[in-house]
Image 1 (cartoon, one colour):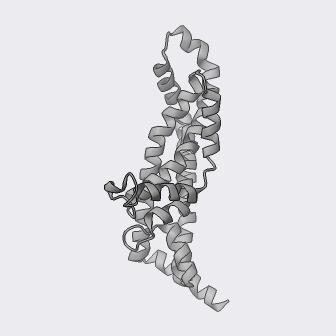
Image 2 (spheres, rainbow, N blue to C red):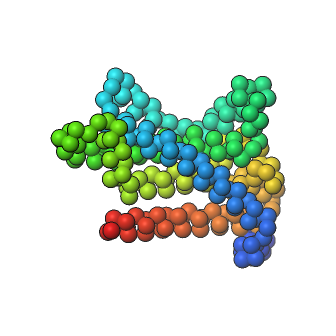
Length: 232
């Protein structure tokens, strides 16, 4: 029990003193996750809106696929990307394996279905409300998608937040394609797993506390921003 107490004390010391090792890991985690979420939103927002507005053969099957991919096992994503980016793989020439870029791709693959599925639901609800008005205005499909996305921008913050939370918590895929290399690809989740397995609880607890604080802070910030924007 005393060891646990000492580990907690040391964990808080690492946070308060901004231990360089902890700061480096947190900074890389944020860099990777924010880039991945930005890429996922760039794909997921228009894809989800298109599925909400368009009508074409196979739409139902595509919607089911996108929804199903929300539960895609991270280790499977990591394995597939590992095979693609390995030296013998078709994309091995890019040299992305065991790099932050590979981790960004892995997280983006996992986050995109979440963003797309949530966007489709939000935009579909708006489309039911404004469909007749948009038709009267002669809005084409592209204009309808952009109009509804803009009108739903406050609600889409929730999709962005869900994607960011998913990215920050990811461990399986980034471990496989990133390799958890110190000073190169070590992020909060992989570092926590490694330090815990080594019995070095102080850094693991410190990173865990930071991860929880980031999640709570991001939720509070986005919800507060959404509330303000909706009253503008």
